[in-house]
Structures are given as structure tokens and as C-alpha cells.
Length: 214
Image 1 (cartoon, rainbow, N blue to C red):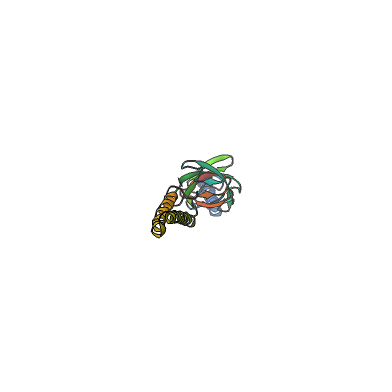
Image 2 (cartoon, rainbow, N blue to C red; image 1 turned 60 degrees about the vertical axis):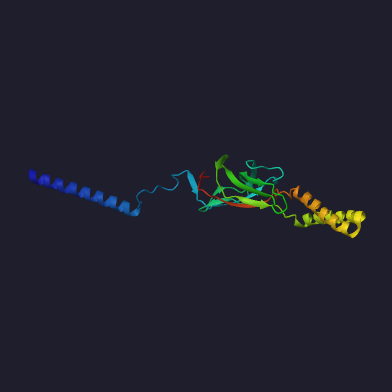
């Protein structure tokens, strides 16, 4: 009698364990989870990869005449910053930048150039450090103006030479006048490189950047 009771209890326990095992297997089949994965929403940050494009609009004019390397400037996002269908930063968000190089150029052949890059983006009221490629603006050339100044110098020199010594004097005066005109050009820098206010510039991240989810 006692053996029969023990046998019955063993069968009941085996049935309970078998049912529990089947329930666990069914739950795992209905809700599979890969090793190492976390449920959505468990992370409060998002990482933008290198190469992410940022389009910004300057809020002030930048010029080699007034800016130097290391100076900072402000801009705003011209387009919302998106990643995987989510908005990371809204259009109009504040952007911070720096003057990478401000070459005033000059001396006939060389022209002024202004190079800028972005260093920060404000998201949810906090500035996040970013690193982007650089954008360079060069000044317009002044070759026509330079040629005119040299020509004027030669003309004045020829006139003075003609008064002083006839044809030969005119030739000598023209050469001297041209040299003087060239000296004026060499002593004068060209036009400054300028990025006007409201200019739209495109940059790319050159390193990943981490932002808080909105």
C-alpha cells in the first residue's frame, strides 16, 4: 500500500514538472530574446556615427578682416538632425563653431581664406561637444584691379618721362612708373575672405557624437 502511494506521488510530481517545462518552452518560443539584447527604451542616449551631415546657417558675418584663428561663432541648424527616423535636434537648435584658420593673404597671387568648423550642438538645453570637417571660403581675386594699378603707374611715369626727356625719357619713365605701381600692389593686401550672415554651410561629423534621447 505504501509503495503504491509513493508511486502515485512520483507520477504526480513528474506530471507537474513536465507541465512546467512545457510552459517555459512555450513562453520562450512566443517571446524569443537574443543573448546580450536589451529591451527598447532601456538606453537614454543615441550615438550619431562619423559622416553624419549637419546643415547650419550662420547668424553673423565672419571675415578675415575681423576674425582670427581660435575665435568662436554661433550658428543654428538649418535642418532638423535626424537619426534612424528620430529627431535628435530640432531645426533652429544653437550650434557653436570656431575659426580654424584666418589667412589674410595678399601679395598679388595669394588670396585671403577663412576656414571654420563646428565644435558644439545644443540639445535639450545642454551643449554637446562635436567634431566636424572644416569649410573654407576664399576671397575673390583682384587681378584686374592690380593690373589697372600697374597700368596707371606706367602711364604716369611715361608722361613725366616725356616731359623730362622726349621719347627716350618716356620709355624710362614708363618702366619706372610700372615698378612703382607694382610696389603699391605688393604693399596692399587683397580683399578679405567673408562668410556672410545667413550663409548655409554643410558639415560632416568626423567622429561619433553621443546625444541624449529626446
